[in-house]
Amino acid sequence: MSEPSASAISAASAAPHLRRLLDLLADDAPAEALGAVSSQARAAGVPAGDLAEVERGTAAALRIRGALRQHRRRELQLTALFDTAGDLAASRDLDEVLNAIVRRARMLLGTDTAYLTLPDEEAGDTYMRVTDGSVSVAFQCLRLELGEGLGGLVAQTASPYATHDYRTDDRFHHTRNIDSAVLDDGLVAILGVPLLLGSSRGGTGKVIGVLFAADRAPRVFSPDEVALLCSLAAHAAIAIDTARALADTRSALDELADTNAELAEANAAVREHSAAMRRAEESHDRLTDLVLRGRDVKDVAAAVAGLLESPLTIHDPGGRPLAAVRPDGADFAADGMDAGWLAETAEESRTGARAVHRDGRWICAVLAGRELLAGLVLHRRGQLDDSDRRLFERASVVTGLLLLLRRTVAETENRIRGELISDLLTDADRDPAGLTERGRRLGIDLDRPHLLLVAESGARERLAPAAMRYLFGGDIHGVSAEHAGAVVLLVAAGDPGPAAGDAARAAAAQLGRLAQTPVTVAATGPARGAREQAAA
Image (cartoon, rainbow, N blue to C red; front, top):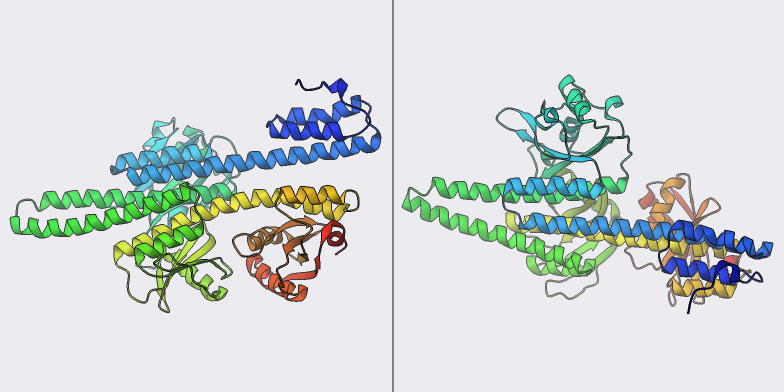
């Protein structure tokens, strides 16, 4: 049956035009087609009241389309990042590894060029090792002294830095040869992140190189893009370390081949070392495969607990357990961890770029750039040998990728569900049955009892993201939205569940830790149905 033309749409109500919006959304129609529905309704003579409803529906459809497109873009980025992890794990040749890193960095961030610098231990300076997209021979052959340029700042601080206009940025030391080479290649906006490995004598992560992405026009790199490049750099550092270790192994075999006794001893050591390396690589591939197959944090925890033969828990930054698994794969009840102790220990792990041993437990920070996503806690009093420690640390990188993916999906879902909450609070009496049906399609049963929490803080820009993280990853089921200068949370009430006052106190404490600022929370309920919840 053919679709009715615009002229055939009834002028008596908004319903045909709203159905048209839903059909266009389902077909992933362009924004112009969605925007044209309001004009068609106006041309068809829809009354003013219904026309306003169509215009509101058009605006909501455009927002949903934008959120879905952003979600798809992030999924493509993370899929490319997982593909990169697999490619790097399979690479053994150092040149092949470095070229793959730089090529994927440029592709993931969609920049004009990407490049990687490595230190020259003998010359005491840093040189351009690999470039992709560069057009300047001078830039491709650039050498710079330690501490010079944006890369020098990244290497000295072991932290990512970005500039939207390199030529006017005075945070780092400019030199004539660097500025000339950058100008010759036409680069303007540059993001650099460190390749960190192990720890140095000073207790901080050892920088083994710097990875860059750059554009030839001004550009502000978002926190998500910085976190993405940092995640790639973490995989790159592991791949470079693996390639170097294998090269050192081959070199050692060549040097010891002349003496039978020494060769036999060396072969035994090499076999042991190679077996440990293979076990770590196979374990890393196994963990990455779990993520690619859409498994959960609990599945990663079970795999690591089995490989290391010790119970393992994963805690969010507030100390709440996200997973608790024994070596045999069985769950166990894990208590919450003191958030201050976890944050202090995770910071030590982050600073040293390695797992740390405290109070009979091994802890490794799960990071996205400089943001703490979670803490991996291995309940084991004994020491970890180098291969097991490396496996545990690689598990934190894979867990970070999984949590980033889950958070991206949760943010998109919460944004769409939040619009339902805004409509509920704005005009619940207009169409309570319609709001209830919308909620059911989004996985929110408004007919079940819910607590209503209203949170306020002096740092409003931190509160909404903190509310998202409060709902993400824990055992609290709900949705949040910004409304009238505050953040409103609609949280499913358990049976019997905490009283409103207890829920408010718990939320205020947790939101305060996540936002790093005092938060005030009021709560009421439980309330059932759209009208009761709006009144609450």
